[in-house]
Image (cartoon, rainbow, N blue to C red; front, side, top):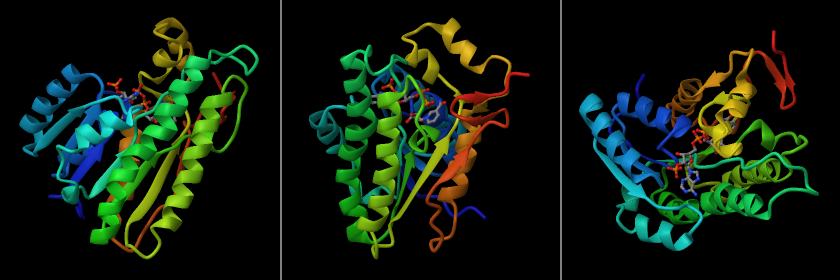
Length: 254
Ligand code: NAP
């Protein structure tokens, strides 16, 4: 049953990977979209691709989620009342250096994107959802929000923060009918590792070598399942690994 047709979703980080896959799968169900990211040329392409393939309306906003001013300016162009679904997806890992060697700029980028950016958007959208007593916020967490691993000191900290935000947001919105959910994936083959290794695609490929990793569409299918539940069902968290992975550092390369 399609309960999503005619709704409107705002997806952060829709220019690639999981966000882009969610955009396609929601559009296929008749959901209108507001797609965001920094790479405006990708947003322009995606808008025309999705509008022509699925016949839904697509608004695009390009901004850096790390800047609250940019977030506020961009969202001033949006009819916030019309947003039914907020997909807090934009995020990244930068580097794998240990605590005593890491680059502070990497840490700041992860904290500002994965935690502060998610909060800036949520601060603007959730009051409107609470006032109209409907809406659904889906946060992209990670298995890194459930366990720590070496070389992930700040990435795992930011995703632990998303886990905490997800739980606290659910309680803050208690009684408003607004649903709050999270997906916590293991290895998903997107641009994520290329970005983590600063464009070193060889090193990025080695993360997925010898295994069948998750792909963005696997996560998008889960997102659609969560968002398409009846109004009385709120799935708080789905932890999903590729079969060949059992913990962040346990990967069976057959
Ligand atoms: P991806 O392919 O690299 O996509 C990341 C998206 O985030 C891009 O659309 C990017 O858009 C956006 N983004 C990054 N920094 C931004 C900023 N400062 N301002 C605005 N947008 C920004 O990675 P992905 O795998 O799809 O990751 C999506 C989410 O899933 C992230 O939160 C990630 O932590 C989480 N996750 C991924 C994995 C994995 O293995 N891939 C596992 C667990 C969780 P622009 O560059 O155009 O701005």
